[in-house]
Length: 278
Image (cartoon, rainbow, N blue to C red; front, side, top):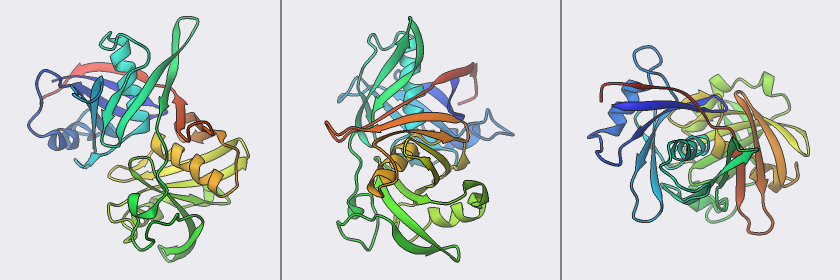
């Protein structure tokens, strides 16, 4: 099985093109190939497929073999692969995902690709659609809860996948490796959750770290950055456009007042290409 290795802000993936022949078990392939000691190593596997609803279809599998609805850093890498390999013949195209049809656009400056901007659609804020249990259809904003024996305030957002955004005073003093696993399996999140721990620096800048559902701590999470800006605006902490610094790089996120969509712009870089047993 030929693959390419990609990273977006340090969030790294194996990308396999299965438009002509699909694998029997993508989850098993992801668990084996993403192992950083016995496999290639990665935060997940991106699968290129044909679609009857959009120009292309993307599936995402986590390191534990589970399938994710969406991956923000992943879709930028996915789009760059299609464009660089002349599979997509235009800079802007549609991609079918588990979170719906999204629209990435290649960003160029002086003929050189500098990144990818993705229309991530509208954030979902109704608790029962995130899903979050026990809140009905209301928004969950700055809700006090107890997790891992401590009190926190959480804001719930879905970008096609569930997020729990927690604002903290000092990101360096937040023990993410200890509390992240507990946040992931909260009963109020029946499908588990990604958790973003965020320090607001000013109205245009934030520092974010993430515990990803099914992948643990990663260097970046694109949908998490989108959820973070959404939560920051809902809590009155930032403007509708901000730069978010993650462990592996920076993303620019905007919540447009024109169409209520979230726009994410950031890098997508091929690391290497290779071949692995399927």
